[in-house]
Amino acid sequence: MSIEYKQRAAVIGAGPAGAITIDALAQEKAFDLIRVFERREGPGGCWIGDNTRPPALSDFASLADGSADKPLPIPATLPARTPKSEQPRFAESSVYPYLETNIDFLPMEFSQEPIPAEASERSVAVHGKDTPFRHWQVIRRYVAGLLERNGYEDLVEYSTTVENVEKVGAEWKVTLRKEGKGSDYWWVEWFDAVVVASGHYWVPKIPKIEGLEEFERGRPGSVLHSKHFRGRDQFKDKALGASVSAADIAFDLAHTRTSQTPVHAITVGHTANGYFGPAAFDHPRIANHPSITHVTPATRAVHLADGTSIPAVDHIIFGTGYTWTLPFLPQVATRNNRVPGLYQHVVWREDPSLLFVGAVAAGLTFKVFEWQAVWAARLLAGRAKALPSVGEMKRWEEERVKERGDGVKFSLLFPDFEGYFETVRGLAGEGVEGKGRRLLRFRGEWVRAFLDGHERRKGMWKRLNEEARVEVEGRGKGERAKL
Image 1 (cartoon, one colour):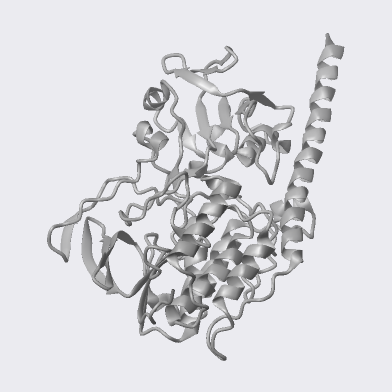
Image 2 (cartoon, helix red, strand yellow; image 1 turned 180 degrees about the horizontal axis):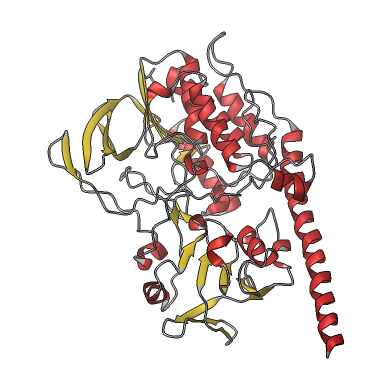
């Protein structure tokens, strides 16, 4: 299957995936028009910080069943100006003031743009002078720099949400909404191709728990998702329940003794993160429990699967992941937190002029984005290897479902990173001399640094857990001696 050369390309998102996509498209020097739409006020995606308090969660039923991110009604006539929308769109930040990357910087950086060697005092204190982790602001500046130093800023419309993307004849009709102070402005633009690089860590997934919404209504802000965590200070002298994937948060609160201890973590019977394991929760000030069955709003008691309960809980933080939603693409369904119908996680086989960058699970993500972006750009420029038939693309997906299942593991590249990188590099081809980004051969040190970073973090947790255990035991002996 071949794709005709596309002259006008739209990119949705200016986070890490969007930024490298812009560069890949621009370097092909094949497009008359490249337009980028980013709903935040600047580049960086989920690495942008917020100065305002996150919104209180509501409509827990839709957060549980994955229907929370509903499309907005589009004005009958465009362009148009409408009252400012109050519907939650979940665009708020997921970073807190002292957040650091949780993997080594080497497997994060793009192949031609090194991440600055800026280590925070906090990271050096915990991991040593050779710490491989970077503060979130370093990553935000890194992503922004890719656009700014190459003069791509004029290509981007910030504070602009893509509300609908539909194929009309041979063109893509893109409906847009720019947020103003008191009203929203709507309009339409037309393209030959669309690249979706908007990420999928936006809409919080909250499990269905009886009494949870009433618990939140009794004290707004007492039920949070980990994306709304803004640091330990708001939990001073509070009892807390933390869910299984919130390892950093639970450890942070327990080790700094910011909240009342123990910090209650819902981990028993849950599978630990495949990369980081359960080490963070082995802290003497963390009490590990089985699943929550229900909560009693009147007494703020949290009831557990083993018949016990935690009384007078002030906050419940859910680290239960995200729901991948595409409200602007009604013709493209999501299922089990993946997008069915994508060949090699990039090409929508129903129409290869719609492509995705970043439709993969965690692991070497920035570099994966680069490889996908270059392939997408070459395809649209008519310089990549011809796509296989629709039948062959469908068989690729069916075989992967048989091997990995029809869920998150489908889009998990681990452990065969090299196989995927080299496949995409081969599909992208070398391009035209002097045009386009050149993709390197896969390097094993990327994976080694990726895995070594995990071991370094696990080692840090184990070391600090043991120090805390010695301190707790010493205090206990001192108190018994006084008696």
